Image (cartoon, rainbow, N blue to C red; front, side):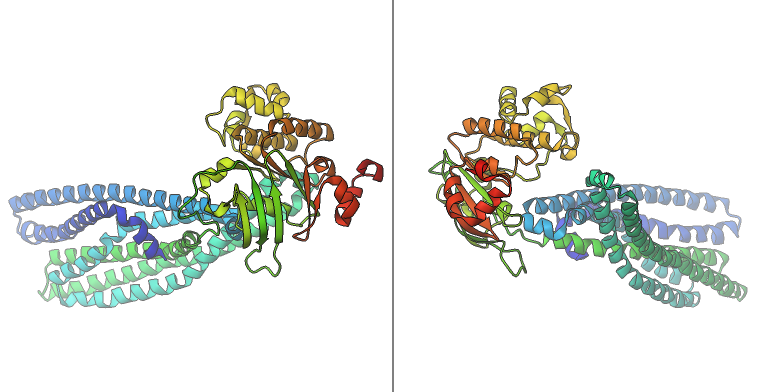
Length: 577
Protein backbone atom coordinates (compact mmCIF):
# COMPACT_ATOMS: atom_id res chain seq x y z
CA UNK A 1 0.00 0.00 0.00
CA UNK A 2 2.84 2.39 0.83
CA UNK A 3 4.48 1.93 -2.59
CA UNK A 4 1.12 2.29 -4.33
CA UNK A 5 0.37 5.53 -2.46
CA UNK A 6 3.81 7.02 -3.13
CA UNK A 7 3.74 6.02 -6.80
CA UNK A 8 0.36 7.69 -7.25
CA UNK A 9 1.26 10.99 -5.56
CA UNK A 10 4.97 11.40 -6.38
CA UNK A 11 4.39 11.20 -10.14
CA UNK A 12 4.13 15.00 -10.65
CA UNK A 13 7.49 15.52 -8.94
CA UNK A 14 9.75 13.35 -11.14
CA UNK A 15 12.07 16.23 -12.13
CA UNK A 16 12.92 17.40 -8.59
CA UNK A 17 13.32 13.76 -7.51
CA UNK A 18 15.77 13.07 -10.36
CA UNK A 19 17.72 16.23 -9.47
CA UNK A 20 17.68 15.23 -5.80
CA UNK A 21 19.06 11.75 -6.57
CA UNK A 22 21.77 13.28 -8.76
CA UNK A 23 22.82 15.66 -5.97
CA UNK A 24 22.83 12.80 -3.45
CA UNK A 25 25.00 10.76 -5.83
CA UNK A 26 27.54 13.59 -6.16
CA UNK A 27 27.51 14.18 -2.41
CA UNK A 28 28.05 10.48 -1.65
CA UNK A 29 30.85 10.17 -4.22
CA UNK A 30 32.56 13.18 -2.64
CA UNK A 31 32.19 11.62 0.81
CA UNK A 32 33.67 8.34 -0.42
CA UNK A 33 36.59 10.10 -2.10
CA UNK A 34 37.74 11.97 1.03
CA UNK A 35 39.21 8.96 2.95
CA UNK A 36 41.29 7.97 -0.11
CA UNK A 37 42.71 11.50 -0.33
CA UNK A 38 43.45 11.40 3.38
CA UNK A 39 45.26 8.06 2.96
CA UNK A 40 47.36 9.48 0.11
CA UNK A 41 48.32 12.50 2.22
CA UNK A 42 49.41 10.23 5.11
CA UNK A 43 51.31 7.70 2.99
CA UNK A 44 52.87 10.05 0.43
CA UNK A 45 53.02 13.36 2.27
CA UNK A 46 53.22 12.90 6.04
CA UNK A 47 55.45 9.80 6.05
CA UNK A 48 57.88 11.27 3.52
CA UNK A 49 57.63 14.84 4.87
CA UNK A 50 56.55 16.29 1.50
CA UNK A 51 54.83 19.58 2.50
CA UNK A 52 53.96 20.51 -1.08
CA UNK A 53 52.12 17.21 -1.59
CA UNK A 54 50.21 17.75 1.66
CA UNK A 55 49.14 21.29 0.63
CA UNK A 56 48.18 20.23 -2.90
CA UNK A 57 46.00 17.32 -1.83
CA UNK A 58 44.77 19.23 1.22
CA UNK A 59 43.41 21.89 -1.15
CA UNK A 60 41.78 19.15 -3.22
CA UNK A 61 40.15 17.78 -0.03
CA UNK A 62 38.74 21.24 0.74
CA UNK A 63 37.30 21.54 -2.79
CA UNK A 64 35.72 18.08 -2.55
CA UNK A 65 34.29 18.99 0.88
CA UNK A 66 32.73 22.17 -0.56
CA UNK A 67 31.09 20.16 -3.35
CA UNK A 68 29.84 17.67 -0.74
CA UNK A 69 28.28 20.42 1.39
CA UNK A 70 26.63 22.21 -1.55
CA UNK A 71 25.17 18.99 -2.95
CA UNK A 72 23.90 18.01 0.50
CA UNK A 73 22.20 21.38 1.00
CA UNK A 74 20.56 21.16 -2.43
CA UNK A 75 19.39 17.59 -1.85
CA UNK A 76 17.87 18.47 1.53
CA UNK A 77 16.14 21.52 0.01
CA UNK A 78 14.51 19.57 -2.81
CA UNK A 79 13.75 16.65 -0.51
CA UNK A 80 11.95 18.84 2.01
CA UNK A 81 9.95 20.61 -0.72
CA UNK A 82 8.90 17.36 -2.38
CA UNK A 83 7.96 15.68 0.91
CA UNK A 84 5.89 18.70 1.97
CA UNK A 85 4.16 18.77 -1.42
CA UNK A 86 3.39 15.06 -1.08
CA UNK A 87 1.84 15.62 2.36
CA UNK A 88 -0.23 18.49 0.99
CA UNK A 89 -1.49 16.40 -1.95
CA UNK A 90 -2.36 13.34 0.15
CA UNK A 91 -4.21 15.46 2.73
CA UNK A 92 -6.12 17.15 -0.09
CA UNK A 93 -6.96 13.77 -1.65
CA UNK A 94 -8.25 12.39 1.66
CA UNK A 95 -10.23 15.58 2.33
CA UNK A 96 -11.81 15.53 -1.15
CA UNK A 97 -12.77 11.87 -0.78
CA UNK A 98 -14.27 12.43 2.69
CA UNK A 99 -16.26 15.39 1.34
CA UNK A 100 -17.81 13.05 -1.23
CA UNK A 101 -18.87 10.52 1.44
CA UNK A 102 -22.50 10.09 2.34
CA UNK A 103 -23.69 9.71 5.91
CA UNK A 104 -23.24 5.95 5.49
CA UNK A 105 -19.48 6.13 4.85
CA UNK A 106 -18.94 8.81 7.50
CA UNK A 107 -20.63 6.56 10.03
CA UNK A 108 -18.49 3.62 8.98
CA UNK A 109 -15.16 5.36 9.60
CA UNK A 110 -16.16 7.78 12.35
CA UNK A 111 -14.97 11.38 12.75
CA UNK A 112 -12.04 10.65 15.15
CA UNK A 113 -10.52 8.06 12.81
CA UNK A 114 -10.90 10.30 9.75
CA UNK A 115 -9.21 13.17 11.59
CA UNK A 116 -6.30 10.91 12.60
CA UNK A 117 -5.93 9.58 9.06
CA UNK A 118 -5.93 13.08 7.56
CA UNK A 119 -3.40 14.50 10.03
CA UNK A 120 -1.20 12.02 11.92
CA UNK A 121 -1.17 9.25 9.30
CA UNK A 122 -0.27 11.66 6.49
CA UNK A 123 2.41 13.22 8.69
CA UNK A 124 4.04 9.81 9.24
CA UNK A 125 4.25 9.19 5.49
CA UNK A 126 5.55 12.72 4.86
CA UNK A 127 8.28 12.20 7.47
CA UNK A 128 9.26 8.87 5.92
CA UNK A 129 9.56 10.44 2.46
CA UNK A 130 11.63 13.31 3.83
CA UNK A 131 14.04 10.89 5.50
CA UNK A 132 14.10 8.70 2.39
CA UNK A 133 15.12 11.64 0.22
CA UNK A 134 17.73 12.94 2.68
CA UNK A 135 19.07 9.65 4.06
CA UNK A 136 17.87 6.58 2.24
CA UNK A 137 18.93 7.67 -1.25
CA UNK A 138 22.52 8.05 -0.13
CA UNK A 139 22.57 5.00 2.18
CA UNK A 140 22.77 2.24 -0.47
CA UNK A 141 25.22 4.28 -2.56
CA UNK A 142 27.34 4.84 0.54
CA UNK A 143 27.18 1.18 1.55
CA UNK A 144 28.08 -0.28 -1.88
CA UNK A 145 30.61 2.45 -2.62
CA UNK A 146 32.20 2.01 0.81
CA UNK A 147 32.61 -1.72 0.24
CA UNK A 148 34.22 -1.14 -3.18
CA UNK A 149 36.57 1.53 -1.82
CA UNK A 150 37.46 -0.67 1.18
CA UNK A 151 38.33 -3.52 -1.18
CA UNK A 152 40.53 -1.08 -3.05
CA UNK A 153 42.47 -0.36 0.15
CA UNK A 154 43.02 -3.97 1.25
CA UNK A 155 41.24 -7.12 0.02
CA UNK A 156 42.18 -9.56 2.84
CA UNK A 157 41.05 -7.10 5.53
CA UNK A 158 37.71 -6.71 3.75
CA UNK A 159 36.78 -10.20 4.93
CA UNK A 160 35.60 -8.46 8.13
CA UNK A 161 32.81 -6.90 6.09
CA UNK A 162 31.50 -10.34 5.11
CA UNK A 163 30.66 -10.94 8.77
CA UNK A 164 29.53 -7.41 9.72
CA UNK A 165 26.93 -6.67 7.01
CA UNK A 166 24.89 -9.93 7.30
CA UNK A 167 24.83 -9.73 11.11
CA UNK A 168 23.54 -6.15 10.94
CA UNK A 169 20.92 -7.06 8.33
CA UNK A 170 19.54 -10.04 10.27
CA UNK A 171 19.47 -8.12 13.58
CA UNK A 172 17.62 -5.16 12.11
CA UNK A 173 15.21 -7.40 10.16
CA UNK A 174 14.15 -9.34 13.27
CA UNK A 175 13.46 -6.15 15.22
CA UNK A 176 11.53 -4.49 12.39
CA UNK A 177 9.40 -7.61 11.93
CA UNK A 178 8.20 -7.35 15.53
CA UNK A 179 7.59 -3.61 15.30
CA UNK A 180 5.07 -3.64 12.42
CA UNK A 181 2.04 -5.09 14.29
CA UNK A 182 2.79 -2.79 17.22
CA UNK A 183 2.60 0.27 14.97
CA UNK A 184 -0.81 -0.81 13.64
CA UNK A 185 -2.06 -1.19 17.21
CA UNK A 186 -0.57 2.22 18.07
CA UNK A 187 -2.52 4.00 15.30
CA UNK A 188 -5.76 2.24 16.30
CA UNK A 189 -5.29 3.22 19.94
CA UNK A 190 -4.52 6.77 18.86
CA UNK A 191 -7.96 6.70 17.19
CA UNK A 192 -9.37 5.58 20.55
CA UNK A 193 -7.80 8.48 22.44
CA UNK A 194 -9.13 10.94 19.84
CA UNK A 195 -12.59 9.40 20.09
CA UNK A 196 -12.76 9.63 23.89
CA UNK A 197 -11.31 13.16 23.91
CA UNK A 198 -13.74 14.32 21.21
CA UNK A 199 -16.70 12.89 23.14
CA UNK A 200 -15.59 14.55 26.37
CA UNK A 201 -15.07 17.96 24.77
CA UNK A 202 -18.37 17.81 22.87
CA UNK A 203 -20.32 16.39 25.80
CA UNK A 204 -18.73 18.56 28.48
CA UNK A 205 -22.07 20.00 29.65
CA UNK A 206 -23.61 16.55 30.03
CA UNK A 207 -20.59 15.32 31.97
CA UNK A 208 -20.76 18.26 34.37
CA UNK A 209 -24.55 18.01 34.69
CA UNK A 210 -24.32 14.38 35.81
CA UNK A 211 -21.09 14.95 37.78
CA UNK A 212 -19.35 12.19 35.82
CA UNK A 213 -15.94 13.85 35.83
CA UNK A 214 -14.35 10.95 37.67
CA UNK A 215 -15.82 8.35 35.33
CA UNK A 216 -14.69 10.25 32.23
CA UNK A 217 -11.23 10.76 33.70
CA UNK A 218 -11.02 7.00 34.19
CA UNK A 219 -12.16 6.41 30.59
CA UNK A 220 -9.49 8.74 29.24
CA UNK A 221 -6.89 7.26 31.57
CA UNK A 222 -7.73 3.79 30.24
CA UNK A 223 -7.47 4.83 26.59
CA UNK A 224 -4.30 6.80 27.31
CA UNK A 225 -2.74 3.88 29.20
CA UNK A 226 -3.48 1.50 26.33
CA UNK A 227 -1.73 3.86 23.90
CA UNK A 228 1.16 4.32 26.33
CA UNK A 229 1.63 0.57 26.78
CA UNK A 230 1.95 -0.11 23.06
CA UNK A 231 4.16 2.99 22.63
CA UNK A 232 6.47 1.74 25.40
CA UNK A 233 6.63 -1.71 23.77
CA UNK A 234 7.55 -0.08 20.47
CA UNK A 235 10.06 2.17 22.21
CA UNK A 236 11.78 -0.84 23.78
CA UNK A 237 12.34 -2.37 20.35
CA UNK A 238 13.55 0.96 18.96
CA UNK A 239 15.89 1.36 21.92
CA UNK A 240 17.20 -2.17 21.32
CA UNK A 241 18.07 -1.43 17.71
CA UNK A 242 20.78 1.19 18.18
CA UNK A 243 22.73 -0.69 20.87
CA UNK A 244 22.64 -3.76 18.64
CA UNK A 245 24.02 -1.82 15.70
CA UNK A 246 26.66 -0.04 17.81
CA UNK A 247 27.80 -3.32 19.37
CA UNK A 248 28.42 -4.81 15.95
CA UNK A 249 30.15 -1.59 14.85
CA UNK A 250 32.51 -1.47 17.81
CA UNK A 251 33.41 -5.16 17.55
CA UNK A 252 34.09 -4.80 13.83
CA UNK A 253 36.29 -1.71 14.48
CA UNK A 254 38.35 -3.65 17.01
CA UNK A 255 38.69 -6.52 14.54
CA UNK A 256 39.84 -4.16 11.75
CA UNK A 257 42.46 -2.50 13.98
CA UNK A 258 43.67 -5.89 15.25
CA UNK A 259 44.06 -7.54 11.86
CA UNK A 260 45.16 -4.29 10.23
CA UNK A 261 48.01 -3.94 12.71
CA UNK A 262 49.21 -7.41 11.78
CA UNK A 263 48.99 -6.51 8.07
CA UNK A 264 51.04 -3.34 8.63
CA UNK A 265 53.58 -5.28 10.71
CA UNK A 266 54.01 -7.81 7.91
CA UNK A 267 54.39 -5.05 5.32
CA UNK A 268 51.21 -5.94 3.44
CA UNK A 269 49.44 -2.67 4.25
CA UNK A 270 50.29 0.97 4.89
CA UNK A 271 49.14 3.15 7.80
CA UNK A 272 47.18 5.47 5.53
CA UNK A 273 45.34 2.52 3.99
CA UNK A 274 44.31 1.30 7.47
CA UNK A 275 43.06 4.79 8.32
CA UNK A 276 41.06 4.93 5.09
CA UNK A 277 39.72 1.40 5.68
CA UNK A 278 38.47 2.40 9.14
CA UNK A 279 36.82 5.48 7.62
CA UNK A 280 35.10 3.33 4.97
CA UNK A 281 33.99 0.88 7.63
CA UNK A 282 32.38 3.72 9.56
CA UNK A 283 30.73 5.00 6.37
CA UNK A 284 29.33 1.54 5.65
CA UNK A 285 28.06 1.26 9.21
CA UNK A 286 26.58 4.77 9.08
CA UNK A 287 24.79 3.79 5.88
CA UNK A 288 23.39 0.73 7.66
CA UNK A 289 22.38 2.88 10.63
CA UNK A 290 20.60 5.33 8.30
CA UNK A 291 18.81 2.41 6.71
CA UNK A 292 18.04 1.12 10.21
CA UNK A 293 16.48 4.44 11.16
CA UNK A 294 14.41 4.27 7.99
CA UNK A 295 13.34 0.70 8.70
CA UNK A 296 12.10 1.84 12.10
CA UNK A 297 9.71 4.25 10.38
CA UNK A 298 8.69 2.08 7.43
CA UNK A 299 6.36 -0.27 9.40
CA UNK A 300 4.41 2.62 10.88
CA UNK A 301 4.27 4.40 7.52
CA UNK A 302 2.98 1.18 5.89
CA UNK A 303 0.19 0.96 8.44
CA UNK A 304 -0.66 4.65 7.89
CA UNK A 305 -0.64 4.14 4.11
CA UNK A 306 -3.06 1.22 4.46
CA UNK A 307 -5.41 3.37 6.54
CA UNK A 308 -5.21 6.25 4.05
CA UNK A 309 -5.74 3.92 1.07
CA UNK A 310 -8.76 2.49 2.86
CA UNK A 311 -10.32 5.96 2.78
CA UNK A 312 -9.19 6.74 -0.77
CA UNK A 313 -10.39 3.34 -1.96
CA UNK A 314 -13.88 3.75 -0.49
CA UNK A 315 -16.42 4.94 -3.02
CA UNK A 316 -19.33 7.01 -1.86
CA UNK A 317 -22.75 5.40 -2.07
CA UNK A 318 -23.95 8.79 -3.37
CA UNK A 319 -22.51 8.92 -6.89
CA UNK A 320 -22.66 12.14 -8.97
CA UNK A 321 -24.57 11.67 -12.24
CA UNK A 322 -22.56 11.14 -15.43
CA UNK A 323 -24.86 13.39 -17.47
CA UNK A 324 -26.49 15.65 -14.86
CA UNK A 325 -29.72 17.53 -15.34
CA UNK A 326 -28.90 21.24 -15.04
CA UNK A 327 -32.36 22.76 -15.37
CA UNK A 328 -35.80 21.94 -13.95
CA UNK A 329 -39.10 22.52 -15.73
CA UNK A 330 -41.31 22.98 -12.66
CA UNK A 331 -40.53 24.62 -9.34
CA UNK A 332 -40.61 22.84 -6.00
CA UNK A 333 -42.65 19.68 -6.66
CA UNK A 334 -41.38 16.82 -4.49
CA UNK A 335 -42.44 13.20 -4.83
CA UNK A 336 -41.20 10.04 -3.12
CA UNK A 337 -42.17 6.79 -4.85
CA UNK A 338 -41.82 3.45 -3.09
CA UNK A 339 -38.68 4.58 -1.26
CA UNK A 340 -36.72 1.99 0.68
CA UNK A 341 -33.50 2.53 2.59
CA UNK A 342 -31.42 -0.20 4.17
CA UNK A 343 -28.01 0.10 5.86
CA UNK A 344 -25.40 -2.39 4.63
CA UNK A 345 -25.73 -5.68 6.50
CA UNK A 346 -28.94 -4.64 8.27
CA UNK A 347 -31.64 -7.31 8.64
CA UNK A 348 -34.51 -4.85 8.21
CA UNK A 349 -34.77 -1.65 6.13
CA UNK A 350 -35.19 1.70 7.88
CA UNK A 351 -37.82 2.76 5.34
CA UNK A 352 -40.19 0.53 3.36
CA UNK A 353 -42.26 1.51 0.32
CA UNK A 354 -42.72 5.13 1.45
CA UNK A 355 -44.95 7.30 -0.73
CA UNK A 356 -45.01 11.08 -0.35
CA UNK A 357 -46.14 14.04 -2.45
CA UNK A 358 -45.33 17.66 -1.47
CA UNK A 359 -46.46 20.52 -3.69
CA UNK A 360 -45.53 24.22 -3.89
CA UNK A 361 -47.61 26.42 -1.61
CA UNK A 362 -48.36 23.51 0.74
CA UNK A 363 -46.92 22.35 4.03
CA UNK A 364 -46.42 18.61 4.39
CA UNK A 365 -45.66 17.22 7.84
CA UNK A 366 -44.11 13.91 8.87
CA UNK A 367 -44.69 12.53 12.33
CA UNK A 368 -44.01 9.23 14.03
CA UNK A 369 -42.45 7.60 17.04
CA UNK A 370 -38.71 7.73 17.70
CA UNK A 371 -36.82 5.54 15.24
CA UNK A 372 -39.63 5.39 12.70
CA UNK A 373 -37.37 6.79 9.92
CA UNK A 374 -38.49 10.44 9.75
CA UNK A 375 -35.01 11.99 9.56
CA UNK A 376 -33.86 9.28 7.14
CA UNK A 377 -36.76 10.14 4.83
CA UNK A 378 -35.76 13.83 4.73
CA UNK A 379 -32.10 12.90 4.23
CA UNK A 380 -32.98 11.13 0.97
CA UNK A 381 -34.09 14.37 -0.70
CA UNK A 382 -30.76 16.32 -0.58
CA UNK A 383 -28.93 12.98 -1.10
CA UNK A 384 -27.26 12.68 2.28
CA UNK A 385 -27.73 9.05 1.26
CA UNK A 386 -29.54 7.41 -1.66
CA UNK A 387 -32.54 5.12 -1.67
CA UNK A 388 -31.75 1.43 -1.96
CA UNK A 389 -35.02 0.99 -3.82
CA UNK A 390 -37.63 3.33 -5.26
CA UNK A 391 -37.24 6.96 -6.36
CA UNK A 392 -37.07 10.50 -4.97
CA UNK A 393 -38.22 13.02 -7.59
CA UNK A 394 -37.81 16.81 -7.63
CA UNK A 395 -39.89 18.44 -10.36
CA UNK A 396 -40.24 15.06 -12.04
CA UNK A 397 -36.49 14.34 -12.10
CA UNK A 398 -34.81 11.68 -9.99
CA UNK A 399 -32.50 13.45 -7.53
CA UNK A 400 -29.75 11.00 -8.54
CA UNK A 401 -29.74 12.57 -12.01
CA UNK A 402 -29.63 16.21 -10.87
CA UNK A 403 -26.51 18.33 -10.88
CA UNK A 404 -25.38 18.58 -7.21
CA UNK A 405 -25.25 22.39 -7.42
CA UNK A 406 -28.79 22.52 -8.81
CA UNK A 407 -30.06 20.15 -6.12
CA UNK A 408 -28.38 22.22 -3.38
CA UNK A 409 -29.94 25.39 -4.81
CA UNK A 410 -33.41 23.81 -5.04
CA UNK A 411 -33.50 21.91 -1.73
CA UNK A 412 -32.37 23.13 1.69
CA UNK A 413 -32.38 21.09 4.87
CA UNK A 414 -32.35 22.40 8.44
CA UNK A 415 -31.03 19.35 10.30
CA UNK A 416 -32.21 18.00 13.62
CA UNK A 417 -28.95 19.08 15.24
CA UNK A 418 -28.10 22.41 13.58
CA UNK A 419 -24.39 23.10 13.18
CA UNK A 420 -22.78 26.53 13.04
CA UNK A 421 -19.25 27.13 11.82
CA UNK A 422 -16.60 29.19 13.53
CA UNK A 423 -16.74 32.76 12.25
CA UNK A 424 -19.46 35.39 12.66
CA UNK A 425 -23.23 35.49 12.49
CA UNK A 426 -22.95 36.96 8.98
CA UNK A 427 -20.54 34.32 7.63
CA UNK A 428 -22.83 31.58 8.89
CA UNK A 429 -25.93 33.15 7.36
CA UNK A 430 -24.17 33.63 4.01
CA UNK A 431 -23.03 30.00 3.91
CA UNK A 432 -25.61 29.08 1.24
CA UNK A 433 -25.70 32.49 -0.45
CA UNK A 434 -22.36 34.37 -0.30
CA UNK A 435 -23.82 37.35 -2.17
CA UNK A 436 -26.63 38.07 0.30
CA UNK A 437 -26.85 41.70 1.48
CA UNK A 438 -27.06 42.80 5.11
CA UNK A 439 -30.71 43.72 4.55
CA UNK A 440 -31.46 40.17 3.42
CA UNK A 441 -29.68 38.81 6.47
CA UNK A 442 -31.67 40.98 8.86
CA UNK A 443 -34.90 40.02 7.10
CA UNK A 444 -34.09 36.31 7.45
CA UNK A 445 -33.25 36.84 11.14
CA UNK A 446 -36.55 38.64 11.66
CA UNK A 447 -38.54 35.79 10.10
CA UNK A 448 -36.57 33.24 12.15
CA UNK A 449 -37.31 35.22 15.36
CA UNK A 450 -33.57 35.75 15.83
CA UNK A 451 -33.28 39.46 15.06
CA UNK A 452 -33.79 40.57 18.65
CA UNK A 453 -31.02 38.50 20.20
CA UNK A 454 -28.57 39.22 17.33
CA UNK A 455 -29.16 42.98 17.76
CA UNK A 456 -28.39 42.52 21.46
CA UNK A 457 -24.97 41.03 20.64
CA UNK A 458 -22.07 43.47 20.89
CA UNK A 459 -21.15 43.41 17.21
CA UNK A 460 -24.50 42.41 15.68
CA UNK A 461 -23.97 40.53 12.42
CA UNK A 462 -20.22 40.55 13.06
CA UNK A 463 -20.60 38.92 16.48
CA UNK A 464 -18.27 35.88 16.75
CA UNK A 465 -19.67 32.35 16.60
CA UNK A 466 -17.61 29.52 18.10
CA UNK A 467 -17.14 26.18 16.35
CA UNK A 468 -20.43 24.30 16.47
CA UNK A 469 -22.19 27.41 17.80
CA UNK A 470 -21.31 26.52 21.38
CA UNK A 471 -21.37 30.15 22.49
CA UNK A 472 -25.12 30.48 21.78
CA UNK A 473 -28.03 28.55 23.25
CA UNK A 474 -29.73 25.60 21.56
CA UNK A 475 -32.78 27.68 20.62
CA UNK A 476 -30.62 30.49 19.23
CA UNK A 477 -28.61 27.93 17.26
CA UNK A 478 -31.81 26.53 15.73
CA UNK A 479 -33.10 29.96 14.77
CA UNK A 480 -29.78 30.93 13.16
CA UNK A 481 -29.84 27.67 11.18
CA UNK A 482 -33.37 28.44 9.99
CA UNK A 483 -32.31 31.98 9.04
CA UNK A 484 -29.37 30.54 7.09
CA UNK A 485 -31.82 28.46 5.03
CA UNK A 486 -34.10 31.46 4.46
CA UNK A 487 -31.16 33.48 3.11
CA UNK A 488 -30.58 30.76 0.52
CA UNK A 489 -34.24 30.98 -0.61
CA UNK A 490 -34.64 27.43 -1.98
CA UNK A 491 -37.79 26.09 -3.60
CA UNK A 492 -38.11 23.16 -1.18
CA UNK A 493 -37.66 23.67 2.57
CA UNK A 494 -36.98 20.63 4.75
CA UNK A 495 -37.24 21.16 8.52
CA UNK A 496 -36.07 18.14 10.49
CA UNK A 497 -37.49 18.72 13.97
CA UNK A 498 -35.98 22.20 13.74
CA UNK A 499 -38.31 23.79 16.33
CA UNK A 500 -37.74 21.39 19.24
CA UNK A 501 -35.58 23.81 21.27
CA UNK A 502 -38.07 26.68 21.00
CA UNK A 503 -40.70 27.62 23.54
CA UNK A 504 -44.33 27.49 22.42
CA UNK A 505 -44.64 31.25 21.91
CA UNK A 506 -41.50 31.50 19.77
CA UNK A 507 -42.52 28.33 17.91
CA UNK A 508 -45.93 29.80 17.05
CA UNK A 509 -44.48 33.16 16.00
CA UNK A 510 -41.82 31.49 13.87
CA UNK A 511 -44.30 29.21 12.12
CA UNK A 512 -46.59 32.16 11.38
CA UNK A 513 -43.71 34.17 9.90
CA UNK A 514 -42.47 31.15 7.96
CA UNK A 515 -45.93 30.63 6.52
CA UNK A 516 -45.83 34.09 4.96
CA UNK A 517 -42.20 33.82 3.83
CA UNK A 518 -42.54 30.39 2.21
CA UNK A 519 -46.06 30.84 0.80
CA UNK A 520 -45.04 29.83 -2.73
CA UNK A 521 -42.50 27.18 -1.74
CA UNK A 522 -42.76 23.52 -0.81
CA UNK A 523 -42.34 22.93 2.93
CA UNK A 524 -41.80 19.55 4.59
CA UNK A 525 -41.65 19.50 8.38
CA UNK A 526 -40.60 16.62 10.61
CA UNK A 527 -41.69 17.20 14.19
CA UNK A 528 -42.38 15.42 17.45
CA UNK A 529 -44.53 18.26 18.74
CA UNK A 530 -48.13 17.97 17.48
CA UNK A 531 -48.79 21.70 17.83
CA UNK A 532 -46.07 22.33 15.24
CA UNK A 533 -47.68 20.28 12.49
CA UNK A 534 -51.43 20.14 13.24
CA UNK A 535 -52.19 22.93 10.73
CA UNK A 536 -50.23 21.29 7.90
CA UNK A 537 -52.02 20.70 4.59
CA UNK A 538 -51.00 17.06 4.70
CA UNK A 539 -49.62 14.89 7.52
CA UNK A 540 -47.73 11.66 6.88
CA UNK A 541 -47.66 9.17 9.77
CA UNK A 542 -44.66 6.80 9.93
CA UNK A 543 -44.44 3.68 12.05
CA UNK A 544 -41.40 1.38 11.89
CA UNK A 545 -40.45 2.77 8.48
CA UNK A 546 -43.89 2.35 6.90
CA UNK A 547 -46.53 4.93 6.04
CA UNK A 548 -49.56 4.04 8.17
CA UNK A 549 -51.64 7.13 7.46
CA UNK A 550 -51.94 10.28 5.34
CA UNK A 551 -54.34 13.17 5.73
CA UNK A 552 -55.14 16.33 7.64
CA UNK A 553 -55.10 16.54 11.43
CA UNK A 554 -58.85 16.01 11.76
CA UNK A 555 -58.93 13.17 9.23
CA UNK A 556 -56.18 11.31 11.02
CA UNK A 557 -57.71 11.90 14.45
CA UNK A 558 -60.88 10.26 13.19
CA UNK A 559 -59.38 7.36 11.28
CA UNK A 560 -55.76 6.63 12.33
CA UNK A 561 -55.05 5.03 15.69
CA UNK A 562 -51.28 5.57 15.56
CA UNK A 563 -51.65 9.31 15.00
CA UNK A 564 -54.37 9.55 17.63
CA UNK A 565 -52.11 7.91 20.22
CA UNK A 566 -49.31 10.37 19.45
CA UNK A 567 -51.64 13.35 19.73
CA UNK A 568 -53.31 12.24 22.96
CA UNK A 569 -49.89 11.64 24.53
CA UNK A 570 -49.32 15.40 24.23
CA UNK A 571 -52.80 16.99 24.24
CA UNK A 572 -56.14 16.40 25.89
CA UNK A 573 -59.11 15.28 23.84
CA UNK A 574 -60.50 18.83 23.86
CA UNK A 575 -57.20 20.40 22.82
CA UNK A 576 -56.79 17.85 20.02
CA UNK A 577 -60.25 18.67 18.70
